[in-house]
Image (cartoon, rainbow over all chains, first blue to last red; front, side, top):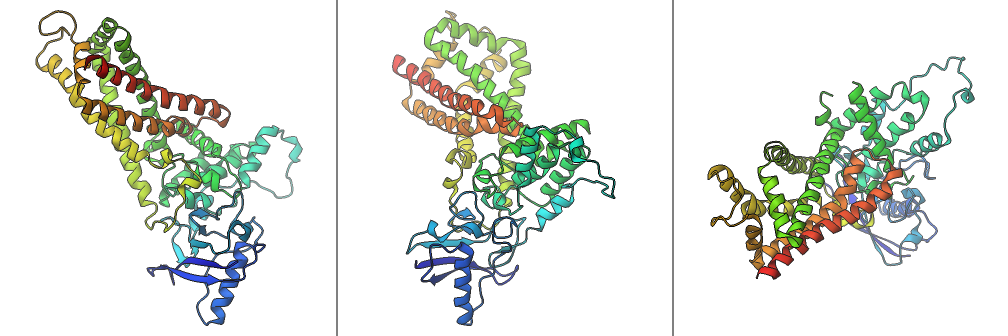
Length: 248
Length: 226
């Protein structure tokens, strides 16, 4: 496959940045999107040019590092995959592919396609955990009965890898799917209930502080989420937030 | 609850609550207007009751005006904040791949409805307030004293095809607004997905049936009295 790439280049956080056109040739349809980017970068290095900076780590869809807004969609046109799992067979020979960083005020660009997603870390630090003393006297897990429904829902919520595709896809750059998933994975389980009131209030307060937009229920996040996190998690967070505020 | 309505989720609840009230108001407004198609007398009776009963005039009417103003002012505030959350726009953004046109353009359908409300207030509400509270005529009767004035006034308004056209366009945008707004309000209020499918179906029926009904009423009076 021969492709034209339109890629956002920005040398640092302060630089203005612009779209730059590149050509890549002899791309195999079996390559992942990141492997195609590796081919481009090899080409650039051989020519003595600066390679395109992009985030990546595990390259098997679980770390949440790879980002990229490809042809107008987070992680590209495929469903339920991260960019590292996106295959070039999703494109046609001769295609022009537009590649941009995830855009949000709360995700400032560091360089080229790399954005700073530490706002997600700060939301997690505000309450995305349970405080448990694990010093050798942990009780048997089976002594706390949990319904199959709650266990499944909590597990589904916990599959969120914090990649930020929800924010990137949302027309309002809202982080509510991410925060909803993180609130839900604990709210559904008895161990998480103990700190539930403070958790939802603190995480939502931090989310608002970071400058994310407000959810208007377009559902774009759910469609683009590589892990299929459901909008139900946002509804649950809303319920949790209301009940936490009523309880004080 | 301090600070609840300043938080992002608190504002979602407030938008949803005002939406619920407005959707309920729309339903009763539709029901009374529909009477004008079947029975001018029943329409006159209902209009006179709504226009003179103290609880409607002094309790529900102020709540409605507050609800309308709150809904669009907060809509503007949220839209401004949401636009600010993405300073640099995408060069290419394929919104149609993941969301409906209605959901992405609530501000535009809302602005059209707001423009319609200005026209609607000039057409009906301001003359009504003038007659009742400035001129002090609470009788609801025609100037010649022969029967109620409400049906006559309504039928007269829909003689002008330009006004009918403006109303029809506004109702189409109202339908688009409700197509997303109905289920969105329930989602914001935390409705569980177990109930969501039926709600979404009901929302679609509501979003089409009510505006379509208003269009039928406007056209009925236009062609019956032209």
